[in-house]
Length: 44
Image (cartoon, rainbow, N blue to C red; front, side):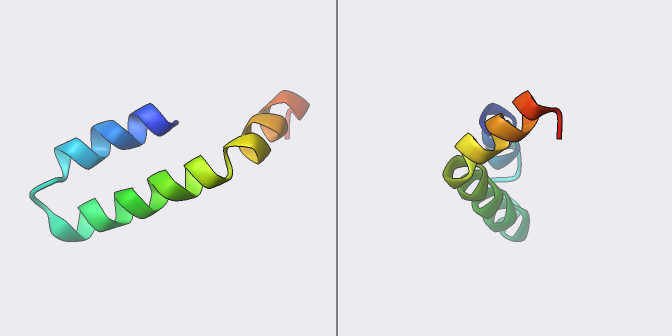
């Protein structure tokens, strides 16, 4: 998931609003990575 966000960040670097949104999503995924992985493992 983080690698997808990095692709979006580099793609939207010229569109400041989308860049900011994708940076926020990247950090949210990074902070919640463990919980996301556990949810996927449980099938939730």
